[in-house]
Amino acid sequence: MKIKPRKNQILIKPDEEQSRTSEHGIITPSSVEQEKKSLGTVIAVGEDIKDIKVDDRVIYAMYAGDKISLDDSSKDVDFLIVLDEDVLAFIEEE
Image (cartoon, one colour):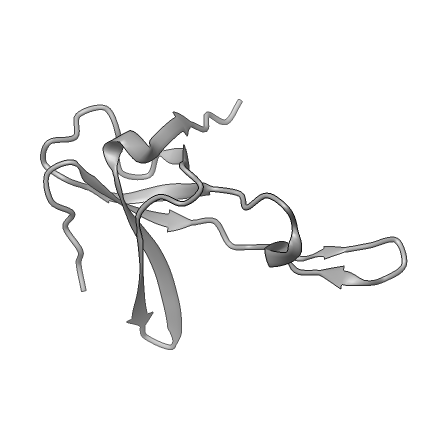
């Protein structure tokens, strides 16, 4: 299945949430942490978007967009559809 966002919308695959293990061996899921990381990879962009490209790594607004889940063969895949103004910054690897 292919999703094509409309006009100024962007399809983002959020980074996987990771758990942390404390020095005492207690696993803390990322949902318990204070700040939610809003990092992801652009999967598709609407036709009105010129400065954001597929495969760009971005930081997006914490509560931005609408979450959608797709059943991609044997596992569920979560995506976000956000407006272009919800993308706050690009992540550039050095």
